[in-house]
Length: 224
Image 1: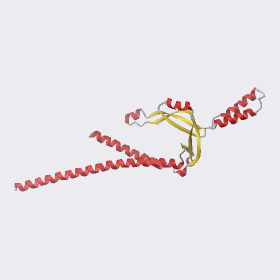
Image 2: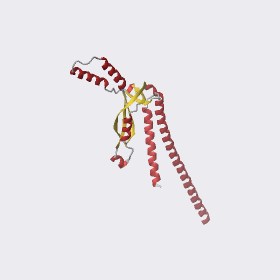
Image 3: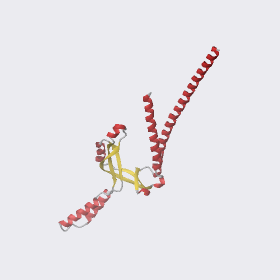
Image 4: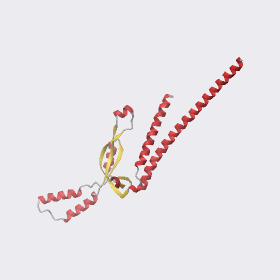
């Protein structure tokens, strides 16, 4: 019975914390009008980045292992292909360098033109196994994502290419609402259970009291 009560207390605490964070999340979600759609960009995998994430442990295990390492593929939008073609075309149109110094200088200019330009970034978390992220990087397959700017915060987010700002805002709001409703439903069910149980106990106690009183009265009359 004590274990059941402890489990119930833990689940109630989880429900309360979920309710708190879902309400907080709804307050932090931007409305669709606060986003500026910058269009769909092609993102290319550039490197594997280790990230430190907070663990979901509790108690002593949480104190000894507060964070864990997960790996993510770092995607950038870049115009390398277009820039490379333009730079090579420009290089071919120029006359041969007159001396080695001019050749070195022209090489520097070409390298500068071919340098990747990072416009936007997207991190794809793959979990705690680095090899999975390395496989995605080695494959080199680009992805398309829509960039939504948040002018008020001088920031941006990326979403799936087929989503709009309205879709994203509705999804975030709906997710937090569902969490809040699930938590409230569970807390209401627990509260109702204890109210019914308390009412039932009071009724039983009242019946026991009435029986004792009836016995007492009957004993008085019999003794008389």
